Picture: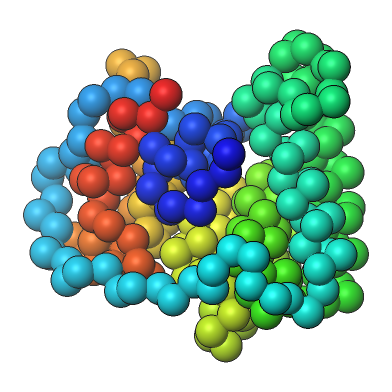
Length: 236
């Protein structure tokens, strides 16, 4: 069962890959470390953050404007998760190896469909497809590492939706960092992590103004960076 919690441990359990995610044929996208070390930048004293803002996410199952699109996005999310976890959904006889072999093709198919969705609807937000449908859309764009232009377009449109109160700013924060990492730019929120040669946690690109990262994270509803790294270390 999918969970809509934004904690790293909760989402990693269903393959959402918030910190990083590696397809079988991609060598440019390191996975999150399982190390227990929780402070990656010991030389930086971070400014204490206020309590994270509370995000008023609509309840799952609330009426939506386009239930057919919502159902399609949720079905695509099931396939996205299957190729990443190696666990086929009910009625799907593919083995873990077969699912892994389908990873990139599944992403290409989803990328093409999401490009059409964005062109027709803009960002599929809470009002259009509900909190679960919008979450699915975000995961699909977050995982569109084979199509940076699609991620950039999604980031722009999702930013507008966040400003209009129609999308989750914490999800948007992850996409901000995902796109920045893909472009070799510093992260804003410190959400994308890999590991160094010794297996210790390492941000995939440096964190911009690292002393203020917890303040920025709190402003979009995220907990502290240390808490996030603890969750990553505890994720299965």
